[in-house]
Length: 476
Ligand code: NAD
Image (cartoon, rainbow, N blue to C red; front, top):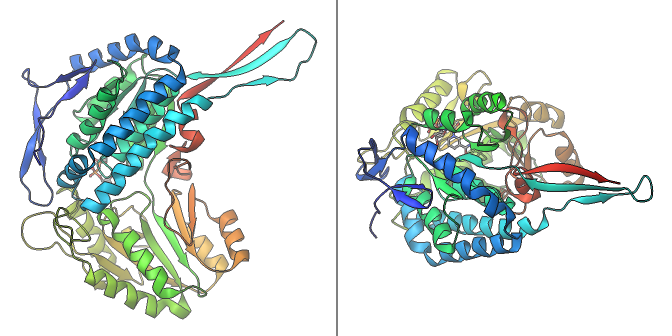
């Protein structure tokens, strides 16, 4: 496989060179430079904005089933190019090839979902107040959108921003992560090859804060969607508020996992370890704080540790490996510091806690137990291969712990009790709750958080609605 030339996509043109500054793209498994990414200038961003504005009326006017045909075609092309695109996600982000293939399937499905859902942007007719009066509610595209996508799902994250906007009839300017550009560009290429008109999809890279500020200050942009940390999300929400733009904020998480004493412990362990170390823990809905009933606590910690030790960590291209490296070198000190802080606060380290020797940003799968709430790992998103396992005795007490943080993205619980399942659904403060399952993201379900994990949802009918505005028309 060959790593491609990198470019921007502006008004239907693949743009590079021209004296633009570049940044190197690094393979996190080998530390080799894969390529050089051109960064957009202010003039590039202005061109993308003007192209979105110009292309918008025709895209908005196109019948949804015809827009849908293009999105269906893009999904087919993504599947056809499956091995090549999955390879890009692995060399850029580090995740294993099976994980990259799974993500690719998710990206393709996002386009098929919005291809169909765009046909269902229904309005309604209200009951008459008087004969001859007609009152209707219609949904219209919000207008040109901006999307900011992080590196941890280099195919899926940009696809969410693009699919929702295009399905709703909006153009979109997307800034994927500078760490994983070729993956995002491969998705863009499939869309262009499928027939997305010039100016409807623009893809830019640059200095993140400069790009987002420039786009969000433009009156052309009417809506935005961001996935990333809560800190950055708050900055972008403030910027968007100045122009009263619609926002979808998919921010950080700190998912609690409640494991009650009536479960098949070995089965839960198998699922929990796989979910925890998926993408080396760099997942916003990663299970982070395990609260395990005291009667099964010791067995759970031992079982988790044994499984974590047995994981083969290495280059994701080698299919025997189960976990790849951290995605970039900034994550190494971040992950190390948060573990050292936990140990300094009295936590027990069962395995891991260190970088692996040799080239690449590999970090050992880490298990901590008996971690006090004063430790940073109990409060800040660890975003790495760290499992924290504490015990509990009482239902009400563990609900208080689960809801303790300002985060409210994902939460999980394992129990066979129907009564508990109802109570958990009612009482846990999270945007997504997995009961006896870690699978909480499919295109037809809303993906988003509450509290400081953000607002709005991607995917589901909500994902389309985020790109639509409501208009009321009365006629007499
Ligand atoms: P970071 O905050 O520098 O960057 C995270 C992402 O946000 C990157 O893709 C970056 O390009 C983007 N970003 C940063 N500042 C921006 C701005 N002003 N405007 C637009 N985009 C901006 O952190 P990092 O070191 O890359 O990642 C570490 C932290 O980021 C993690 O601890 C995690 O909390 C968060 N993160 C969250 C997700 C998620 O899925 N919610 C994904 C990746 C990173």
